[in-house]
Length: 196
Image (tube, rainbow, N blue to C red; front, top):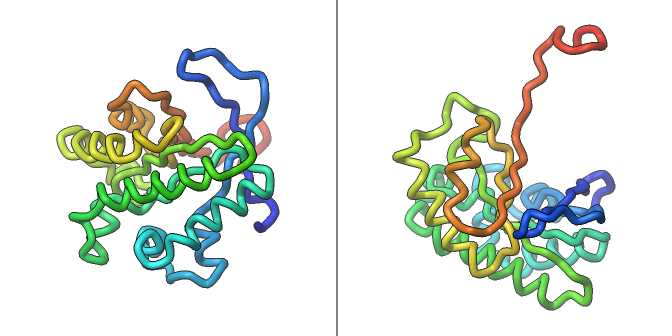
């Protein structure tokens, strides 16, 4: 594992009671796959790894656990129709999302450590582009299908790099706990320390 790829996460239980311990969340799956020589940056290489190299995906999860992470995230950031369309795989998004959940759950369950599985719910179009966030009519059915595909395998859902604050609400189509990681934009000249 490259140093500096881990993040701290304070986890809430399903009963909304805050835990007092800090749990280490894993880092990038796509970046690790690329670093290990799998695929190219075509937007769907990490999704293709679920089909072509599922053992490598599992090994990345295992290595994150060995490095101290106690939350692993499903390899489902690129298993969305708009990304999979690049490889004519868009009709398999539910299957690939479920496979990402299954692999992560199997790795977590085989560990001697207590490991949680976070179900990754990504933005439904290009990351970091709030102007491309799909309408509710388009996004709700997709998020519902993603949640249903992951739900049997995950302990909670992680909405990743959402560009618009209300986007995470679309992903909450289940009773499971949802953690949101939002993109916050720092405007130049704003805030207290001069222009950054």
